[in-house]
Image 1 (tube, rainbow, N blue to C red):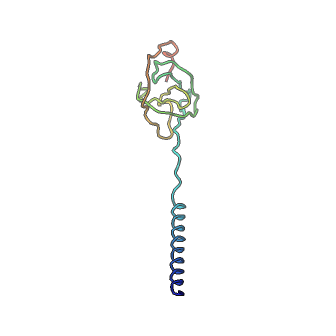
Image 2 (cartoon, rainbow, N blue to C red; image 1 turned 60 degrees about the horizontal axis):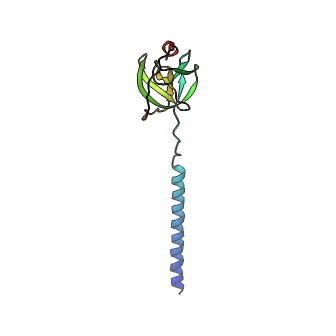
Image 3 (cartoon, helix red, strand yellow; image 1 turned 90 degrees about the horizontal axis):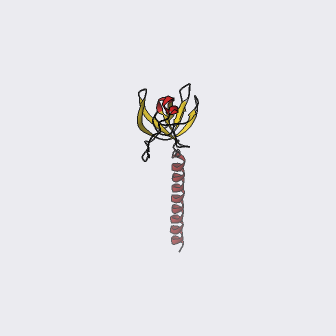
Length: 134
């Protein structure tokens, strides 16, 4: 009887040691694992000292909906290839409102995806949009 108790105790102690070791290894692995970084949402900074126009569509033929001043930072939702402005044919759709700015005057930070479902309609042709730049 004493011998079987001794064997049972050794097995229990060995089992407890294995559990302790496994717990220690798991804790070490969790502590060593890098934290998952939340992807930063892309934004743009206006680099034109005179600012940049916000357009209804990605074209200078489109009506001006507002302007962004020099060094303004805005969230960028996506980009498209459209009218070429001084060698740059990328236009950004802003994240917080449905207006476009040309990438020629906005430097992006982060990765801006291409727009997948952009609905185009007829562009308005007004005197204001014909005289505005960007």
